[in-house]
Length: 629
Image (cartoon, rainbow, N blue to C red; front, side, top):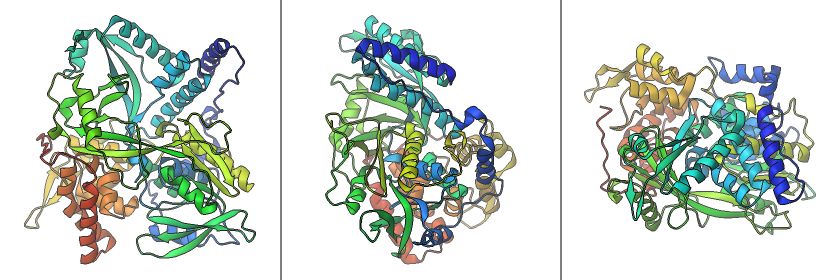
């Protein structure tokens, strides 16, 4: 941390001098981990990571929200269960505040499950910082690099370092990118993941066999490889929400805010009217402060308080596609900082497939954004310029669009530039809005949001922010070798078509998947597979087990088939057809867990099928690699 501050001070001072003026240097706050965590962190750790720790039932969570009346309000009610909202609930409850969280759909159902899957410091922002002598951009990078390492440490089972290759087609590019990425390493300081380095053309071809050596009037001169982080975004988000619940927050998905409650004078927000979207029941929850973390939909919440509120969201569409694994080697991504039309494209290995993208275009705010064919075509055309294999539309296994909530501070005098950083504001008393930013910095965004809520409501937390030292559920005690315990000690008991239960091998693919998806609690899932005859795979070519449906219904607030195929597992994002094939069995197991009748089962199947149609895969895209029989 000291070295990081020194580097930040040195580089910042250089930028300040170049800009011809003084600047306030960014000093990262002293973290709880700098002091070894302390008794508060240890108390939380025991509560969250106890061997028998189980999240409260959905019914208990709703009862806790209903019990927060005028005479005993919550300290903080968070609206929105994405990365920022779930992070805010976790931050607030670990400070000792009484906290509730409601989410209209499911945790990570919006932007937070549709990201690029990268935890990055922002190489492009660093370039802008030096080219435009912009210290503000430099602060963003410095801050994001610190947070990047923190996220990986707090969720080691869901996050890892990923090498990213940048192709160079001139010796100028070699020197330019090499020097720039060395500065990126330097700025990271102690938070560095691995050192960047140059690879010759021959070495690059060995590391990335599908990379083209020759192109239109150009030849590859080598590549520069640097490291950023990668994550399973939706499972990380679900983990944050469940960790908040284990720490004492009342979190409730499929619960929509239909109105905000005001005090008798009508001048302060004091709670919300909430509808349980699973059964239609409505109730009031009172809170000293309401935090609006609704992402792209935060303006809608703000207008519940003041219908004349100035809009602060400039929505941007980011489209991604999923391709077979042979497009990119395992463990190596490809990032092109500037294509022919100036946009950035990438191809990244992810969960056994390849994710490519992205676009950045203005869009309308909608719950289920869909990618347009021209956006898919742009991505395919862009990556084809850098590959030596045929890039086909029929290879697209899934395609999706996410809405980035780029934010304009409504209180700022100058709105010329839309911020890539986050914005925290209270433009109506009792309603604190936090929006913008990116996945990498969700933790610090939450910290800023809770700080603002404490000030707004004159709250009395037991401690300061401790989330730097709080690992999410499954992260404590996890090691990369943890999967071997599953492989050695558990069987996958499977029911045959005749109803007979037969043993199967808990092979490395299934064991690794469970270990990375659930961390140190993966043995609970393996035990269900072994003891309840739920050891079958849900879809050919993928390691997802039937036992996961039951586990997620019991311990992760999985309330619908969509919750499971899109966020508890990532089948919808990996291959739409495979998700469709798994749906009937997913619905069957969820029906058994939640006691659904035949009518609800039919409705679930219909709704999930329609949901999958928004993922624009090629209809004839079939990818069976034969690895997981």
